[in-house]
Image (cartoon, rainbow, N blue to C red; front, side, top):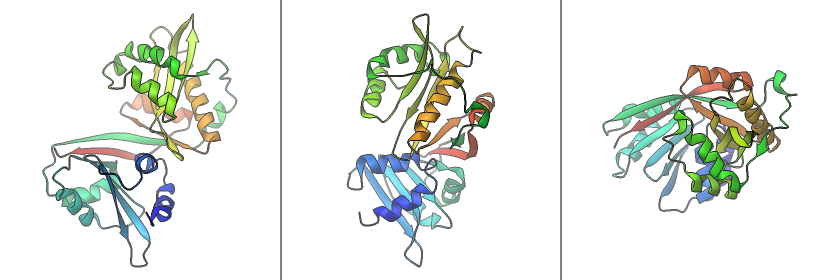
Length: 258
């Protein structure tokens, strides 16, 4: 695609917010049946907005004014259109022009981190281990033991594959021969990664284990020049992430139309 360089220059301005778009382009390119991209160019020929379709989901991004109605028309005319997701400040501009009835809307806090808070810079994380593919079974067992993650669709095979191909990584702490705390990434690309699966087993909480896993994870990814982002619904969880160095950057919307 001749516009690739201009596309990535735009996406890199907010790499955490564009985690999914960047990852899908790097993984699948521009010539797949299940993935398409549209660009909105200004009068000077500069790319100002991008619309990505992956399967039945559309994700828009804009760095300034853009043709929201034009993006909405693309979605409205697609008989396979099911969902629009993205940063609220962008999706809310497109939503009024979509000609298909909105069935359900979900909003979650979206936060990113580019550096640790100063008081955590010297934290001793020597007890934290980085997971290998052979640890996928224990990771799955730990998360399955915690009610918050019991209904997760991510299973052992998926975790093992992510650890093998580098699209995810996990860190954990062992105590008394058992894995008791963990933090992971998902949807990693060359510029950013999503933090997921932050958890500690009952009986091992309030020891700072999850914080140590998170700090080790953040340090390693920052060394690779990556930004970290995450979703959260629970204000208490948000407060914990903010103590580490995450800052709210808006809301992530998932608008379902079919």
